[in-house]
Length: 96
Image (cartoon, rainbow, N blue to C red; front, side, top):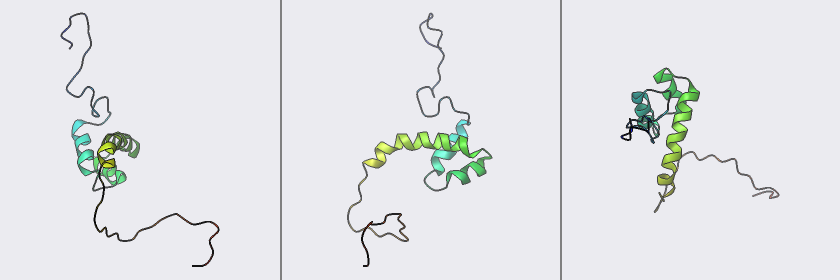
């Protein structure tokens, strides 16, 4: 509760965080955050016994928050990639 007696608002330690107002339990949300870099959202949903849409909605919020941090990362030096696929094609160029 708010310290002001006229306020009547309630809040918790989760208020104002990505964890507030979620259908998922706190432990499930921690599990999603921990496994998001390593597993697909579909697999996480199956392991938790939750529907894909609930897990996806929370994961999307987490990824939006992390986007700023990830955008600041820059690769340097020699970068090696395996099995690179692209949908890019150059229109109008023949041969080569």
